[in-house]
Image (cartoon, rainbow, N blue to C red; front, side, top):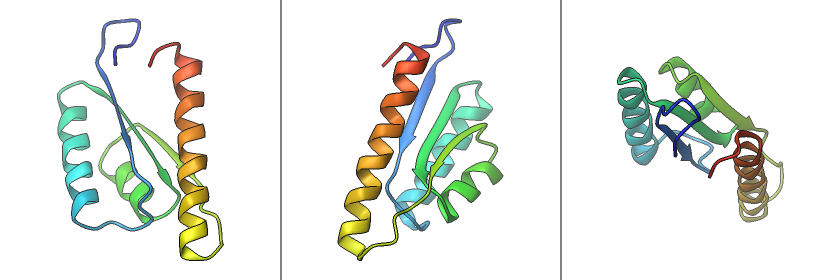
Length: 96
């Protein structure tokens, strides 16, 4: 995605509540892209991943509070809420 000033924007989207191998890779890529001047956005549930993204220097982290349901119901609702957040960001910034 490109912003109006031709800066590349990359949005990382994760429904993970905890940091495991894939999330470590996500954070490594996001941090490296940020260091290269790419506008990086992370959309994820509140918690460990959101906290570590901020610690990794990611300027824009949209942390969506997780739903306290059963594991399956909670993850389904979290995913829906994360997608809604992502769509709001895309609409607001007028690009997809």
